[in-house]
Image (cartoon, rainbow, N blue to C red; front, side):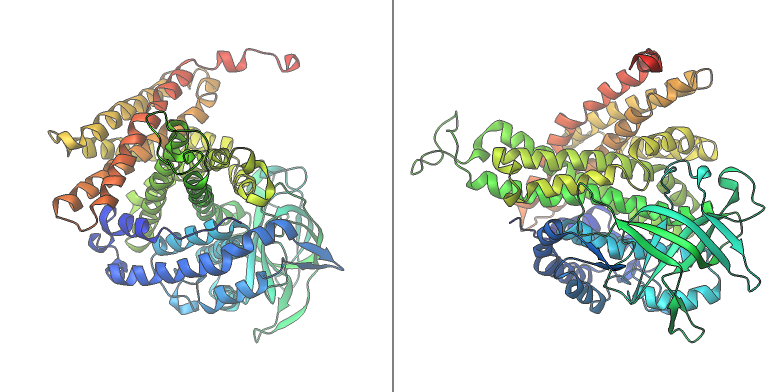
Length: 591
C-alpha cells in the first residue's frame, strides 16, 4: 500500500527562504515565525500521514453508497472527519469571529497540500466547505454570516457549490433551475444539479448548498442567474435544525477516481432557498468560490504528483532489474536497483522538478491572495487573477502527467491495483476537468486575463521576470537559471504579440493557440520560481548552512528544470505561430 510523508522541510524552505514570509509586511505574517509554522506543519503532517493516508485506498475500494436516501461514506471517514474537526483545521485561515484561527491563507494552502496528497477524496468535503464559507463571507448578509458560518467553520455543517446541470456545464446561461419568490422573502428552488462534489454524506449534521438558479425578471443568459443558500435541513431562528428541506440525492455518480467523495445528482423539489448577494448577480458571487476552488484544484494537481513521486522513488530504490551500464552498483545482488538507470532518473527528475516548482508557484499565489486581501493591494489582486488559470490548468495537466510517470516507474506492477499507483493517476485526472475544464482556463487566460485592466498585469509579470534576471547579472552561478528564463520570457512575449497582431482579424488565431500559451506561461512561472529558489539556496550555502546537501539538491533539481523542461516553451511558441489554419483545416463533417 502506498505511503505518504509530508514534505514539511521543503514547505519551510519555500515559506521562509524563498517567500521570506516574515519580511513581507503583510498583516498577520509577523506571526509566521519559523518555529510556529514548523509546529503547525508538523502537526498537520502527522494527521495526514497517520490518519488520512491509510484511508486513501479504503475510500478508493469502498466508495460511497446511497441507501434509502442516506449517503454513507467509506469505513474510517467519519472518525477522520472528527479528527480534522477537533484540530480546527478547516478554520485555520478563517476569521476568528466565526470560530476560525485567522491565520494567513498561505498556511491553509500548505496544510491543504498535505491533506490532498494524503487523501484527495476525503479532503474535498473540507475543501468545498471552505469555498462555500468564502462565498458567504464575501456576499452574504450579516444575518446569514451569523446563522451559517460558525457551524460551517467548525464543520458541524459542510458546504457545496451547485452549478452544473445535465444539459449545461461551462455555458451556465443555459441552466434551467428556477427560483420562485415567496411572500416571506425566501424562494422555492426547483431543478436538478449534477456532479455535486460532497453533495451529501453522513459526517456532518447539515449540508449548506449554494445553488445557482434563475429568478423571474433577470433576462436571458447568465445575467438572469442568482445564487441561493439551500440547507439540507432548514435552520431555526435559534440556530437549531428544523425540518428536512425539499432537496434529495438522486444518485451517486460512478466515477473514474475520487471514489471516497460522494459526487451526487441533487434534486431540488420546491426547496426553500435564500438569496445570497444581489438578485441576478449570482455569477459574481459564485466566482468568489470558483476562484478559490481553482487555486485549490491547481494544488490538487501537484499534490497528487507529490504522493505518487514519493512512492515511485521508494520503489526505484528497491526494485532490482538490470545492471548499471557504467559499472555494477549492487554486487551482492542479482541486479542493480532501477534508480541507477538514466531513463528512470529522467522520470523521477521530471516529477521532482515539477512538484517542487509547482509548490513554490502555488504558495506564491496564496501569498498574493493574502497580499490582496490583507493589504488591499490591487496589483496583487490583478496578478493572482492573471495567474489563477495558469495555476489551475498547467499544474493539473502536468500533475496528471507526473502521476502517470510515477506509475510508469513501477512498470507492470504500476498497472496492478494492489500497488495503489493507479489511484493517484485516476484521482489526479478529475482535476483537469472540474472547476472549469483546462481548455476553458486557457480561453479565460488569453481571452480575458491578458487584456484585463489594459494589459497592466501581464506587463507587470513580464517586468517581474526581467527584474529577476537583471538582479543576477554577472553571477556565473545563476547563469544556468537566468539565460533559460530570459529566453522563455521572450518566447512568451512573442506569443502575446502574435495574438495582438492576429487575434482581432481572426479570433481563432488566438483561441487555437490558447492552450499552448497557458502551458508556455506555466513553464515561465515555474522557471521564475526555480530562479528564486536557486537564489535562496545559494544564499544558504554562502551563509554556511549545516545542511548543504539539501540546498545542493535544490540547485541541481532547478538546473534540471531549466535545461530539460523550459525548452518546451519554444515548441509551444511554434505551435501558436502556426495560427488557426492547421487546427481549423477540416470541416466538421470530415472528422
